Structures are given as C-alpha cells and as structure tokens.
Length: 111
View (cartoon, rainbow, N blue to C red):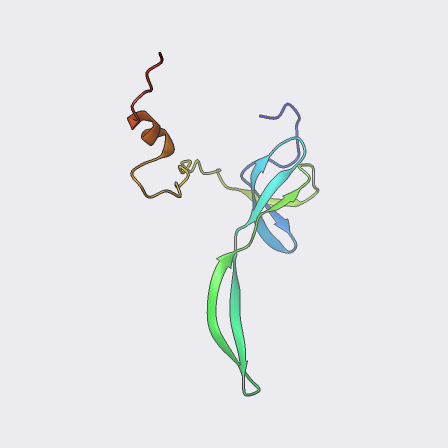
C-alpha cells in the first residue's frame, strides 16, 4: 500500500475521454483505469467495390495508465473485486508441472 495520499483510489468511477472508466489500482506513480463500456468492432471487406460487414463483436477496451493525482470527474464508486489469482498454464502436456516432475525423479546418490 502506498504511503502517499492520492486523489484517485481503487473503485472510483471516473470520466475519461467522455467515457466511464473504473480505477483498478493506484500506486505512487500511476493509476490503472479500465473502461466500463464495451466497444463495438466490425470487420469489413470490400468485394467488387461493395463494402460488407464480415464480422461484428463487442469487446472491452485496453487499460490505461494515468497520474494518480489526475483531475478527473469522479462520478461513483464500485467496490473493487477480489478475483482469484489464476495459476499460470504450463506449456507442457506431459504429466504435470515442472515442480511435480522434479519431485518424481529419483535422487542421485552422492559417493
């Protein structure tokens, strides 16, 4: 936790670039904000001079780093979620993680 008092705190809902964003984390040098609204994305293709939409989907935008003392309008508060930390997925598919395989190896005898 930071020893400094900053303007933005985790959970604040702020207006940034005319959109609502949530402050996810704050430290001495930056605040990480994430957009709350999804953005519509369309994949278009031009065939015989006619533009057609091939695919359309919604996605959340990327997080942005800003100053923790930014003068943004704070419009609300959302309790930060404590999402469980996911274990990294091993690229190996041969019977467990590296530490599990090391535990199964017979130990070399020292002479």
